[in-house]
Length: 488
Ligand code: SF4
Ligand code: SF4
Ligand code: FES
Image (cartoon, rainbow, N blue to C red; front, side):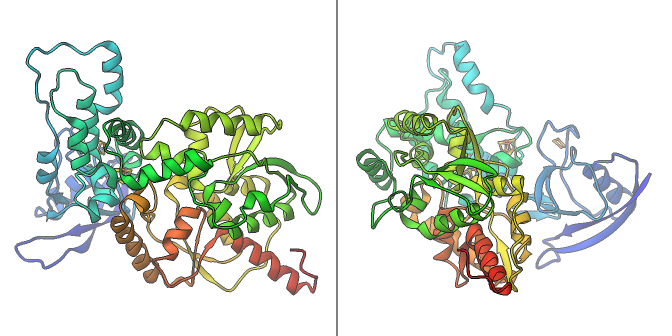
């Protein structure tokens, strides 16, 4: 047996104006689940506590709650001491019970064709990754697009795609999905990461629906313009001045002994728009013994096309990029754009290893920089944290140079073609980030993605810096303190 104290969000619409927390202490068996704790509190301490459950075995989806801020199934989540239990982020009816009905009612159902034929094996296989939904709505509760638009949400898109693949359905699923907000998804992947059935909605439903929508002529005009730019220039960002690739020599040698050699995949944003961050990163790498090879023939990774369902050029871009690095004998390709990194890792089949700069620097270990007297918050880029599973490494680096304060990891609104295609939505999500940043009391914002850097800078009065730039500031301060002429 163990003693557990938990905090639970309580709200009774008959007497409360808003929700408040109450603490309860219960004795539980080892291995007890959150649902067992809720039962114990209800049965022994407070029979007025309301929560939902049915199967108690992860099958019905009715018990979804947030534990320490993360949506989970109460019946599957192990109960720990000092946890906070809240309703998922949907309208609350009472305590932990939320209103599921409006969302569930809006999910499409099959419209049978007159002379239905059974699906073929290939169609069944295609539907499989989309059919295990237990309608817990955890995905909807974390979707940033749902919060600021009329988007029906991830599981509605999952169902549209499932039905689009089913020969027994007569509905026009692509038109429906577009009308329901298909292009408002930022591809942040939050829905996938909280889904208890691990349904990969962004790649298996959203991007697939967008690809179908492209064939039907539904692609947004701004996305078509980006595709045309890539076709003409090989880049998704228009040229404004000399590019990073033009400025740099083919090989950048480190200041000291060579500890590793990598090929650098620069990405369109760092090539043209956020060049200083990439230049700062080169200096940090040189200082830490990394030799950098920069092949000039590299082109856009294709991420803006894949995320918006415009696949015609993708194979060609993939081939060109792979050949560029392969022909130089490069076995490790470094990325510092979260979007490029996730694309090279997850949408390419590369004959080389792809590594993000945060992974590389923590793997090899860095020369300690001087500490700067600054309080900073770190914004997790979705395509770094969820797309590549890189959460701890940036924090490890940042803590070596400044004080780090945390804030919830939520999409800034710049991804998935939303900044170009739905600027109002992108601005609404960016403003929400701006508000969160204000609450932390941080003096600067640090991130590790050019899209986040660029977008968040438009929604906060705090300086937004790349992690590499902050490390470089730490090195410069170290040189200054030691009375050395700046190496960099
Ligand atoms: S990827 Fe993000 S924005 Fe898109 S449906 Fe999932 S949670 Fe919503
Ligand atoms: S897709 Fe996953 S998270 Fe969303 S309702 Fe279905 S089971 Fe729950
Ligand atoms: S009670 Fe059914 S999934 Fe938890």
